[in-house]
Length: 475
Image (cartoon, rainbow, N blue to C red):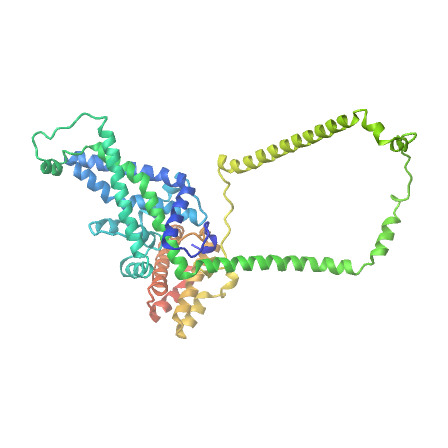
């Protein structure tokens, strides 16, 4: 993910403004979010209903539906994260990429659902997009949640109350259309524990409340995450500098293109050029024209003013002027209506047909590292071995990582995008290479992430082993 590709305006916001940004993101891409979320929630509610019926207790169904809530959040985050970085996905693309948002630590997180996580929407991008887990994940969450963890906690508490109120409201409304339910002599507590107070229409009401509110919760937490990374990593400064560079580059290109023309024009005499043009055969010629004129053009002007004022001709002139003005206004209105119709059609046409996918163009850089072949040594493995023997282990590891990415993109045809994370890039690469190269890439990415994110210095034997194996990997 590169900040320059982001589809929102990056600036330093307060946490409240950041959460408002999340709501604006959902307002923009709500169609892409709600359709896959509705399908996933419906499938989960069906599984919960089946398990509750099999167990004979509705609380089993409620527990299963609650236990799967992180799954619903991942669908929303997958769609929003791709849309924010310029890749708006439809329903088919989201379902096709199900392995991406179903993986990345979902099962381990479900196994510890008994431990409450009041910053779930803020911590979810760290797990799903960055792939940080275990100790590295805890350290990363600790860094990002400083001075903002309380906002994420209160966001969870507020959305929890809204969801509860909405689910109870929907459940009570549906209860009005169903027959009254008796407790059969049971006390209230016994009826509550046995589930006699509730029915499966309450589960349906809860599912509807989750579909409505969960996107707001995830979008607000994701916006808090983006704002925090903007504050810590200066994404807004990077984007501004890139725009300034692009503007100055365009101006310099225009100057360079205009200089030869100015130099060529300065060498010629304008007077001489005009004489040459006028000397052409098209200019010296005569044209006979016929024009109608009054016999006595000054007769009307010489008449006394009172003589023309008394015959009422000024009323005709006024009417003629008003008619011309009305006709001009009418044609202006017609032209404005046509222009508006063309503008409206131009805006609506992209919605009527699916956008044509552009041909894949290898990016010049990935994860902030240049991967163009001309930017790398001819023998990456030998150069990395020399750096490792000189004690420059981090530079050697970075060179091996850049060389591997360049080999995947430019030689093996792996279509990596700037919006992909490192784990996504690894998953795409392992599908296109043999198991031996896939194991090498997994080892290289693991050591690089430990070095880049966990600040764990790599061992010299590991780096030298990767350098010696790089030639086999790129052969």
